[in-house]
Image 1 (cartoon, rainbow, N blue to C red):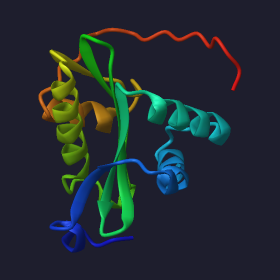
Image 2 (image 1 turned 90 degrees about the vertical axis):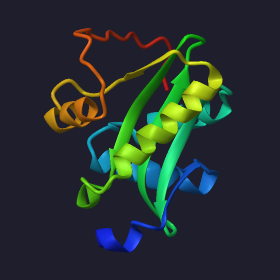
Image 3 (image 1 turned 30 degrees about the vertical axis):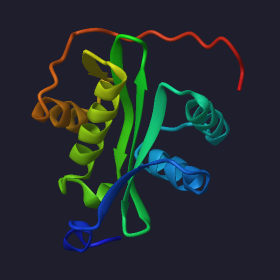
Image 4 (image 1 turned 135 degrees about the horizontal axis):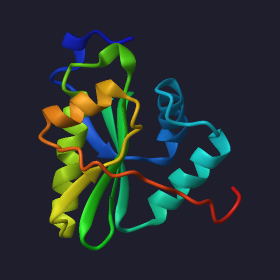
Length: 148
């Protein structure tokens, strides 16, 4: 665990590198965002190959302390899988990831940004509201097309 004062001036937001994949998956698993490690590896590989998507990582010195996925569909930007080491919540890491993602998406031409999160995560809902996001009252449905 890193003490909050330690990283305050050392936080960097960067694009994921190959050596980050295991740490990103471990963080997502620790935050309940990943059920299958195999599927997560595939998704990370797919996102890294897509020019309109990125995975942002937050580092305090060399420790990976946060992650967020950003994607652009040609009109809107999307943020998902935003996760911060639970020991470091409420220290501005999530906010920094979202702001960096917003800037990246805006540079691609996004006119609006949507955040996807588990509907039952009240902390995440409050976090998004605190950043000015408004609940659109929509449900997301998915259908798996290929087995990973």
